[in-house]
Length: 200
Image (cartoon, rainbow, N blue to C red; front, side, top):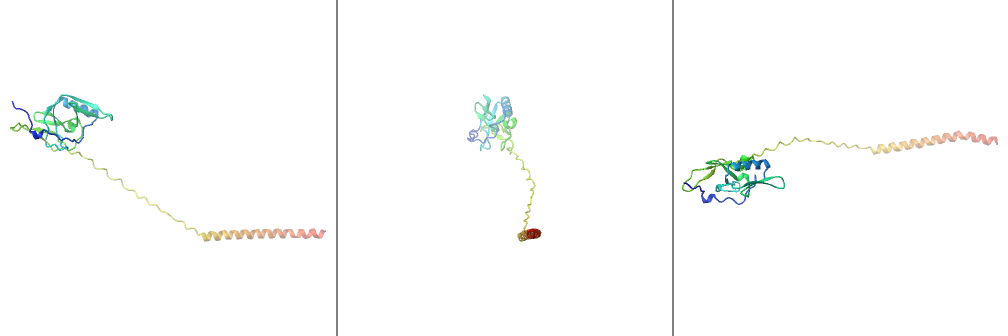
């Protein structure tokens, strides 16, 4: 019977992980649990973290999901929160598939599956079978056409000299009118005064 093992340099995973699918919706978490319940053999492989090769395969003993205060869910594997983007389950004797891809969580820089090569004197070699998926970022919409608004400022030049002259002319005419009216009144009253003197 051949022992299943992995070369020593394949065992050590990177310490720092780049989170992609650690907190997911209830639907994605439920799908991930179903996938891992049906395929309990799992491998951890974090390419964005700099892992040189997948970790050692192991069998899942405990699965659960936990809800955080913001309403997102985390999947716990053997009572440890995991990022679905870096978990692979064995779906065939020589193939492991990415849990995030099977559960419907988008990933970036992650191989969709791993291939298991035949055992050799140095162990079983597990390698990515496809080029890591790169998230497609939609191009931003074209900028809206710019509307140019032109403001025309019109300056009204007031002829103050004409206004002053008009005001002066109006005042002169008014003064003349008053003098004429006063003169007429004086002339109209003078004969009556003479008549009153003669009567005495």
